[in-house]
Image 1 (cartoon, rainbow, N blue to C red):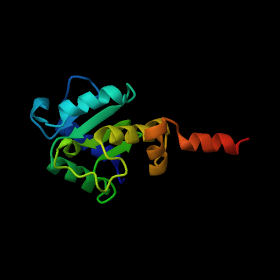
Image 2 (cartoon, one colour):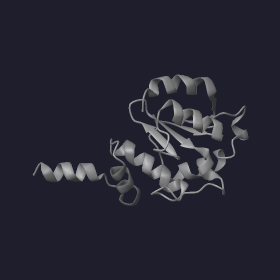
Image 3 (cartoon, rainbow, N blue to C red):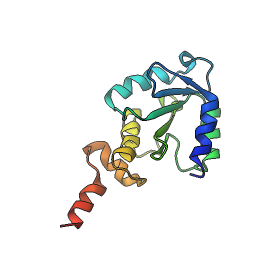
Length: 151
């Protein structure tokens, strides 16, 4: 990702904060105009991000495309981006559409996508396999491996 600090500035220009201070709807005039917001809020009850974290939801394909183009991650993700340094996760709200295809995803539901992104945070890892491993086990493979290697 080229420059997430620049992205944070762009996001700041697009934001509309939702009920919780850490959830932000992008690309809509009012949070209620974001079709992904209600199901995301429900899913975030089960997948709890840290209190000091901000979850952004791209409420339109146009906003999502701008984000992945600016961050130079086209073709690398179609559902989420997590920046551990700036403590933010950006979710593609389109994954809540019945027309969205999870065919190219390892994780096949929005809740599993959120758990995957949470795995990057909790495990403090950019590695996709570490985040994927966290989804089912809630355990960070990298920490288990590091603990085993130190013995």
